[in-house]
Length: 423
Image (cartoon, rainbow, N blue to C red; front, side, top):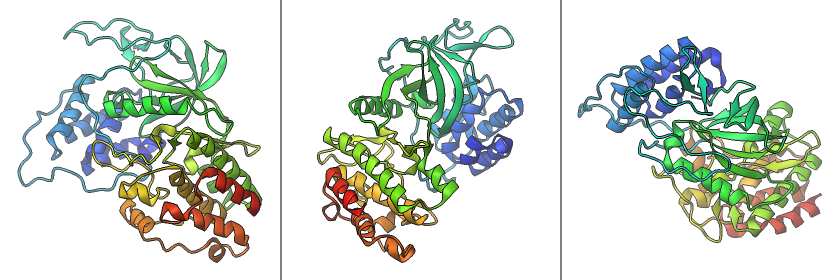
């Protein structure tokens, strides 16, 4: 799935492999390819979905594959009952940085959005769909939905946002730099894929990201603007910050100098302090969610997993999948316990360890193995890995990694003081 999203040259081979693997998590990513412009890839997607629709998946999953084919105008094999001896679910581990959801085909209430209307009602069978701003002309002169995963530069969305370029993406959809004609400035659109837009839980998470994040006004936190209905997908508009995530910095430069790490850490903690004062816990602090520019100004992104703090319990998805990233998740999140600001400080401790040593403190062959390491830690100190690291900084990071919240700095302001002393 990761290669499918990042390497177009391997797309056809990935689709064939996903069909053979027969995991229901492949249905939505493959279905998105049906709206693309690569004819060879679309043909492979049709074949793969037919394989999945007629395979040994749960009936609901096979029905989703068949429905995707019907929407694309391709015939699907009938959804037959699963033989009793056939496996009905994959036992593979989800990718560590994603959360698995099962999209619902039920009607989804459309959240209110600024300057856009809800999606049109379904047409009667055989009727010609009406023209709408969110549709693009096809060669036949009819209108076809945008491929929101690969919008071309210059594409105009809801008569307001003109695409400049695609700047990222993942399992949830794609991220674009766009020009907002209403305010004459560049902003970022985080677009949920059309298939996932049918998932009520995912839409609620988007609404939650907007509701919580708009309350945080701080120079070290990306500013969220609006939830939008793009007539075919939903998106969040947010501040554009021209920087790289810390994961990319680590891959390019390796371990960072102590002084630079202290400067980055202080900004992250300052931004977290502003969120924590509002009772908001991020719950997914990791290098990919920390952006830095050429002057090492830091911005925290993606409060989409955030929850209100004050002892709030860790939320699970409807499918019981833990929300967070295994390499950076706090022990209390794994146990389903109470989360508060100290949960974010633990994850930041993992990030600091990685920035200073170039290695993650918790690593393993799969997500389950990594999660157990958080619960029964045996992490070497920073000075055991990199002898020249100052003692106070070593103690500070290891204190953040305390398995129990009581052993960590008790809030972001306390950690700021410790960072100042270490500096």
